[in-house]
Structure formats: structure tokens, C-alpha cells
Length: 263
Image (cartoon, rainbow, N blue to C red; front, side, top):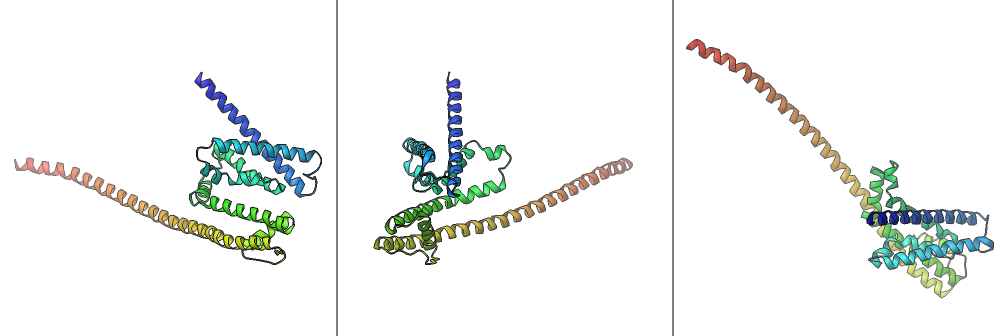
């Protein structure tokens, strides 16, 4: 009975993950059509489809949040899912790629299709062991919410506000979009200070990772060379032992004959 229940649970999880993947891919397609001007997500049946898919992922996120053992870890590891729930623009839908990736990891699909190897292990180390994915997620959250607040204060489009947030956080500052209101200037000041800090952390994380990788590669090469030398010495010792045994075997009968002659 327990086995049947376990199998039914596996099937339910499989159907649930398939549904999540289908809805995520469908939302990708709709968002791509919207960004290319082929449909309008604010009018007609597409608005209803967007809303139903959004409600599904919203309820899914809330349920997983309350069922999570550690709410803090859940929020950190599912920041992309939270960003994808921002309903103000279809571009946020593409952050649902994180759900697709989590499903791929859950079923080890990369390994099953023979795509897992040195590259994927290095990518996993780079994203998770260094904490890069969490810094990147927090940086994206800061950029997105800053652009949303900026758009509200400045009465500008979200596209222009996102462009302004990126150029401000990276200290490029083209000046094509500038804050006019006091609220926008406050947001700009906070974003500049926060952007410098988080971008510095991201840069240092990337630099440290590749520096450590180079050190590990050098150590690996040194160990391989040392291993080859040890194997070479081991073979030489084995040859010397075999030669000594052969010499001792040849000298033993000769000494025996010499003793007999003396007798």
C-alpha cells in the first residue's frame, strides 16, 4: 500500500512539473509575441490568459512558501520566481526560466541526456558555491524595484526606467533619462550607492572564482605530473626487483654446484 502511495505521489509530482513547464513555456511565447507587437497582453483574450497563468504561478509560489521549512532560504533561492510575478510588464515572465531549470535539476535531465559533465559542474560551482546566483538575484531585485518606483515618480515607461536603472547602477550614466522629481532623485541616490556595492561584489566574486580555478588547474597539472613520475619510478623499481630476482636465481644453482665440488 505504501509502495502504491509512493508511486501515485511520484505521478502527481510528474504531472505537476509537466503543467508548470507547459505554462511557463506558454507564458514565454505570449511574452515574446507581446514584445514584438503581435499581440496586446492588456486587451482581448490574451489578458485573461496572462491573468490565469499569473494566478497559477502566484498560488504556486504562496503554497511553496508556506510549506517551506526555512522561509529565508526559500526567498533567497526563489527570487527569480518572485520577480516573475511582477505583473506590470511581460518581460518579467522570462524569469520563469528558473522554474524550468529547477525541474531539469530535479529529474537530473542533463545527466540523463549526457549533457552533464565538467562544464555543468563548473557552472554549478560558479553559481551556487560562490554565492553568485544570490548576489545576482538581489541585484536584479534592486534594479527592478528601483525602476518600478522611478517610473511611478517620473510617470515614465517601465522600459525607459529599466534602462535608467541599469545605466545608473553601473555608473555609466548616459544622461538620456534623468530624474526630475524629488522622489526620483532619492531613488537615484539610493540606487547609485547600492549599485556600486553589489556590482563590486559581483565583479570580485567572478574574479575570485576564475583565479581559484586557475590555481586549481595548476595544482591538478602538478599532481598529474607527480603521479606520472611516481608511476615511472614504480615501474623502474619493479624492473630492478625482477632483475635482482633473476640474478639471485641464476647465482643460487652455481653456488650449489660449487659446494658439491668441495664435498
